[in-house]
Image (cartoon, rainbow, N blue to C red; front, top):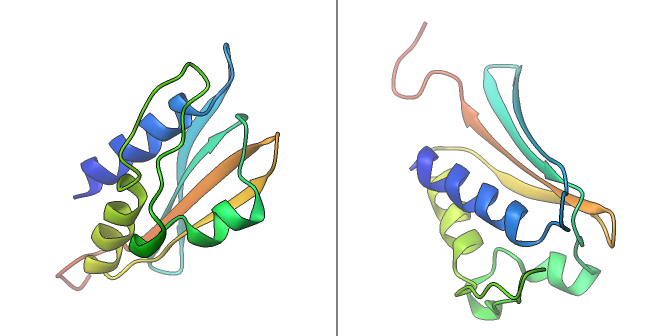
Length: 113
């Protein structure tokens, strides 16, 4: 599931980045959770898009910067996978300056250390 989440977030970052854009993927440990960040300097989202990104009732595909098409379901699936693994996902954004998709997962899933 984590591979699918990362693949989708990276694919979206590429899809909505400008030519020669910059994408950064990194993770940090915070209080027993791993926080994974996929950041790009692409076109970003407006407030309406941001509010409906993870909602199945409002799925709508957007054309990428190179006219790529999608289904609009990728982020809904990411949210479902993250939540099934006891994590949360959200987006931080500046229209025209890129997006930062962040999700957390418990550091030790299914075992105590």
